[in-house]
Length: 129
Image 1 (cartoon, rainbow, N blue to C red):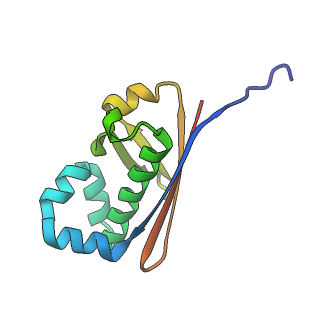
Image 2 (cartoon, helix red, strand yellow):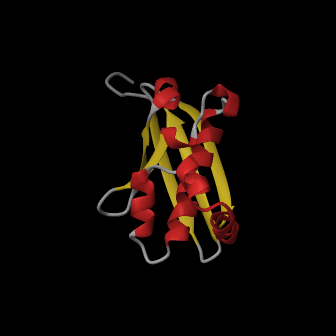
């Protein structure tokens, strides 16, 4: 159809995280774990909430879902902090990319969705060009 722009799905990824497991990891590794995985902005956002571990788990799940959608594996240059999860004023999540991940996804759009219950977080990522 003339005048219509088409996109192509390049990858999809989903991840499910048990919130209790994230809490145990934080209890065991503390700032070593948090500093390796999350940006200062992600941690500030999570700690501004009533249940920070829910938001930390959600960000972890999004990073994993993006990594799966990217399909390069860890040897393909994926680093945890190269995917930063943020929320707009209405709470809608999105990602900001840095480093090698930003290079790999130049010109692509990443759509993410997060949902959680009291015990589990699920995140979905879709990469389209």
